[in-house]
Image 1 (cartoon, helix red, strand yellow):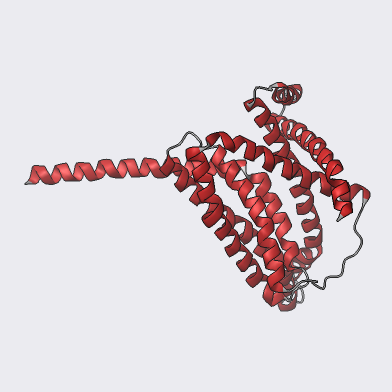
Image 2 (image 1 turned 180 degrees about the vertical axis):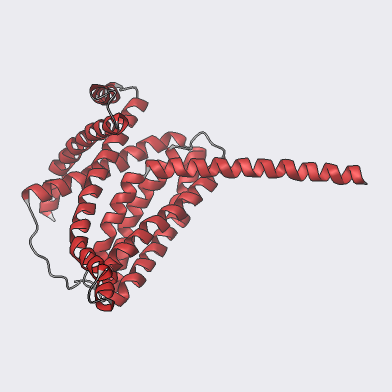
Amino acid sequence: MSSGLFALLDDIAALAKVAAASVDDVAAAAMKASAKSVGVVVDDAAVTPKYVVGFPAEREVPIIKRIAMGSLKNKLFFILPAALILSQFAPWAITPLLILGGLYLCYEGAEKVIEMLFHPKGAHSEKPTKTEDQTIAGAIRTDFILSAEIMTLALSTIEDQSFGTRTATLLVVAFFITFLVYGAVAVIVKADDFGLHLMTRNTSGPLSQLGRIIITTMPHFLKTLSFVGTLAMLWVGGGILIHAAEQYHWTHPEEWMHAAQHAVHGSYPLTGLVEWAAGATFAGVIGLIAGAIIVAVTAPFHKAH
């Protein structure tokens, strides 16, 4: 009886070890997948705050919550099943889908750069021109494209894993990325209110000064975030195209990127960061060139509409 109990306990311990190892594998894969998607995540966080501009302060968080729920539904009910089906039955389609997503990112990034350089926007009215429901629907449509790119990038890092690991990893990424993006967006859009609250409750002293700093710096922070999001789109999009070219045995772009990184290699402090920046810059230039070509090709169609 006791030997049977000990055998059962041994089996339970073995299963626990396997489960723990599986959890570790999923966590490691999810972190790797999320890290590869960072550029798209930054862009998602940079784009979303504009959807609450002009609405009453009390509606900002409810709007973000509804967009976040729509984003999660996009990932769980549409993108994740499609990604798993492709990875199981047509894994060859993942690279072409990544290329399409990369080209879209390059196009969006290049269009923003061209807009900033040649068509700077003037002051905009803060009064929303769409209803809340229309605004949320538009935000969820935009999120679908970005979420699809995030999930495809995540999938590309775990193609060699089992179906169960792929499923669990994509589920973790879906929840983690959604919470990260829309949690950050909620903090960003409510920062002004928090700063005003500090100034109202404290007419003087360090808390009042902190509130004043928050209110003063937030417009600059939002502009910086938007700029970083644009750079991230170009660097991620260009990087996708470079790595996809290597998959199809065109290795020159990858070799040129490594050459750029090797050119700045040295024994000085932060050499790893400088090498990464060199590679990201090269990828960004490739992304800008590819995006500018698409902008030029599609410009007549935009004018026609």
